Length: 288
Length: 187
Image (cartoon, chains in turn yellow, red):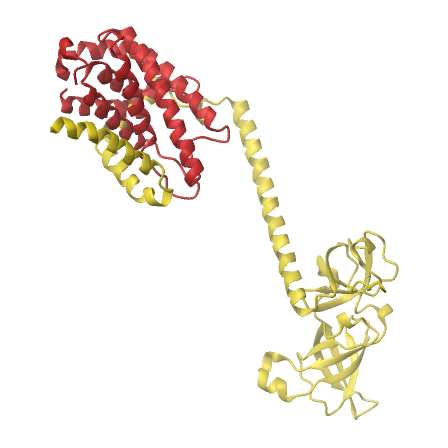
């Protein structure tokens, strides 16, 4: 009887082993590691002693037995790959930032407009033109608005862009001339108070400090920090509503007592921006 | 066969394989004391004892060689070595009528045959596992062929190890409780 049991037990064990060997890792990982630990716990002390004997008889290769030339080469390679790793990390961070920027702008604008992410390859000062590495090959045309941080209008593409680059005229450049804008209540004071006040239209001109100056009625409800957004029909529609800056000073005009004056600080200094987005025109539909 | 003797010898072989035998490593391949021990039992023990010795040896080997998963705990796949050893024992069981029982050279040849048979089954089971449930597998990008080649080389080294180790095991023959020569092959 015992003999029959043994004869059947071996194939049964083989069958069980075959099934176990084909189980997914998540099914066997929890218990197989425990089984191994149970098997090896009593063997560990002996294994440790024997491993020491082996290391004495045949020392493993390690830093101590590598010659100086090899060690220097390995360190050099390590430093090289460490540098590459840091470089790639920065590149990934850069790409993530571009992705966020494009995602933000895509939500704000319709699908008809194109968005070109570009770099400022040569900075001008705050009121002078900067060179951007995107051109007609990317769909950029003269007059396209140049944006940063998702909604801040930095300027526009100068006329006749090159194939691979273009010039950006900063929004506070004297060459831009007067621009029409709208002062909207800042949301810092709360949505309720902001909604009670209405928007005020204003015409802005650049002063010598790079700020915009504009006239308003003396009784206008304008507070410091109120946002100023472009509302100029001479600019592309895609630029309207973009943020220019914030009210930095409110005063009264001496020569016109019923008129007030404001100064608007640009939201961004265009000379300190490294990455921009250009909103290109929607492609023209071909006539049938 | 005295089971306690085999279990003690198997554990000693397991510890030696894991900790000391790497001193004999050649080109990243090492022999196996456990393999030689199982071959010795297959040649000298009863048929059933040989099969159970192969099962125990293969199982202990499976539980000693984890497959490392990147970013996850290692897993021990129970089965490939167990089945490989069992197949090797089956092969030796059919050949031991033509092999000298107490010959060191016969042990070396039997070790080589056993290792080759086991290697084929081990690689086959891992390949089947890869096909059915996917990674991980114990071979690198060079594929299953490299593992088969590595196991075959290990078998060659083990057969060389079987020359001195076989001599020692044959010397210890009385303590194993194997059946006398006249009763071989009956069970």
